[in-house]
Amino acid sequence: MFDTLSERLTSTVKRLRGQARLTEDNITDTLREVRMALLEADVALPVVKDLMARVKARAIGQEVLNSLTPGQAFIKIVNDELVAIMGEANDGLNLNDQPPVVVLVAGLQGAGKTTTVAKLARFLREKAGKSVMVVSTDVYRPAAIDQLGALAKEVEAGFFPSAPTDDPVDIARRAVDEARVTQQDVLLVDTAGRLHIDADMMDEIRRIHDAISPTETLFVVDSMTGQDAANTARAFDEALPLTGVVLTKTDGDARGGAALSVRQITGKPIKFLGVGEKTAALEPFHPDRIASRILGMGDIVSLVEEAQEKVDQKKAARLAKKIRKGKTFDMNDLREQFLQMKKMGGVAGLLDKLPGVSGIPDHVKNQINDKQFDHMLAIINSMTPQERRFPDVIKGSRKRRIANGAGLQVQDVNRLLKQHLQMRKMMKKMKGGNMRKMMRGMRGGGMPPGMPF
Image (cartoon, rainbow, N blue to C red):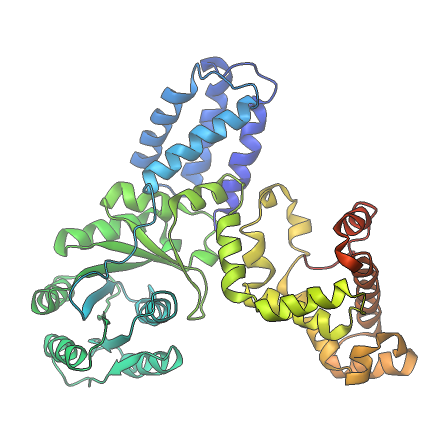
């Protein structure tokens, strides 16, 4: 997300380097470039105008601190204003009401409401420790109820059954009663969508809302619709008292216009981002972290949080102990590292949060992809237990057998063996915890070429 905008803004501020002050003369061109970058990212025009006015007012005549270049000072100003238009901090769900806390989920057809309900259920169960029940009031879309039932089973949430012949308002009322009797902490109510906003749909959702009085009413919208996402959210808010927005499909949105427009246009906070198809692919929306990503400074805080949650700490500790004792880093260890990286969203998920990635040329970024992980895992999986422990035994006939088993070429096996050998040498320098030796190895070109990290 924000790839295009990040590249434009990062390259634009370079023009200010070498200047002693930010003046109206040397900042006008930069502001024009920033304005064009925002418009091309499909940010709503009123939002762009307001942002530019505030940035210009702060930037012109801004004294540059001794430790900063004008470009850095300008980035700080833009960062502050981006955070201001997206909301100062993460606005989470209100879970302090008397249980069951009812969350009504609304949106247009195809925005990803049902999947978002499952993601929210998993998030609340795993991150907040809540018991969750879900229910579908969508009696119109074929298999909508069955879809939510299957997803509820996957995320281990309770499921209140309903039928296409039931009245949506009655379904919602009965679900609230059941959630209360079974002492559920949260009830998530999935509603029917339409291809466009129409009176019947809005009337039905209003009646459901009035019947169950939800604590949260979330609007789910496809981020790839750009500023239209904000306009649609505003139309819903006029008919329904929304408390927040969930932006979906952000992993496929290189522009980011919706994220920058929704809060300003609707006055409602973005609470979550859908960052993939899997039920774990949901992130709380942190304006400061998003602004940092937009400006090419990465999101190390989210990266560390993700590592703490998804990396198996016991396995990591065992590997560290093994290396400190000088034991060989074998193919089993390499395979485990690949699997841990995949848990964290693969290369694409990591690159999005690393500082400076926007400055990497496209042809380089395109070579770094998760397909390499899959190929290397296939090669390791084709090895025997002995070959994984002692990869030096892998010679001609073994290489051909492994390549055939993985559906790849012998040169692919050779490449992995070479990369593993280089990693093994680097790990050997860490014996006894000597990190400085490893860092010298990296500076001397010891990082395995072609590795996907």
